[in-house]
Image (cartoon, rainbow, N blue to C red; front, side, top):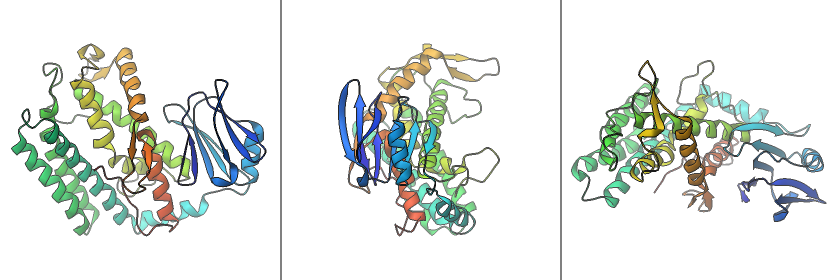
Amino acid sequence: MKKLLNTLYVTTENAYLSLDGETVVILSEGQEPGKIPLHLFEGIVTFGYTGASPALMGKCAEYNKQIVFLTPQGKFLARSIGKQYGNILLRKKQFALSEQGRFQIAKNMISAKLYNSSSVIRRAISDYPRRLDCQTWGESERVLKQNAKAVYWLKDAESLRGIEGASAVSYFSVFDQLILQQRESFRFQGRSRRPPLDNVNALLSFGYALLTSMCVSALETVGLDPYLGFFHADRPGRCSLALDLEEEFRAYLVDRFVLSLINRKMITEKAFYQKENGAVLLTDEGRKSFLTAWQERKKEVIVHPFLKEKVEVGLLPYVQAMLLARFLREDLDEYPPFLWK
């Protein structure tokens, strides 16, 4: 249970939410992990299938407090809201900025992506100074950090896409050197997406898909439209804003996680199979191993760089979605992207 940005996050597995007077009671396996008065928060986000009592849902609806239900993996299920609760003003602001003002938000997100990518390299150099080509990696880190700053001088979206693409090439050109174990089975010669053509790309694609789902759920939770973005172009069926938000977390949440799986031998070549068209995919057991480790990774706690509060890694997209909503409501002067330090 974590109260953050006036939202109560319930991550306890099998937690059932009930009402005692004006207090939310968390119940789990016969225990009572916590209580919190209703007046202390604006909404509840709960991860799990156990649910909430009708009395609590009714009281929250009466007080215009939403309850958002997500799966244990973070996939959006439903939202319980009252008659007067809505996010029409928030979405109107989002739509307005998608026409004018989107560029500044996009620059913040992409600058954070490049900075976090450079941080992955910096941490690798620090951890393995004798096993890596530090000169090559140091140059890539320098380029990424320089580009992260240069983003703010750009004048148009096309230039932003150009510097983001060039930075990705620089970053992935040295990614293979971070694979220190199982080199025979996990060679990385460049990013391949649709379909992934090797074991490393299969892991990256699966991780990015999970991260996208988390970002969609986070945006749905705060009442934003995940399909109307600021950096990615609008297309039917494309969750552009979720993809925008995802950019801040790719290196920190997925890339480092995939490297850890390989280097710690938590996943091996037996976890993959190849289709006739050359696509490399995870087996059922491979996905199970990935997801088990992924759930553990999400439970890790860090200090959020902007809020200066301890936050579970799995809640980071929800925190950033809430900060974006607050910026759109003009509670913040600028959107503060996630920067891993």
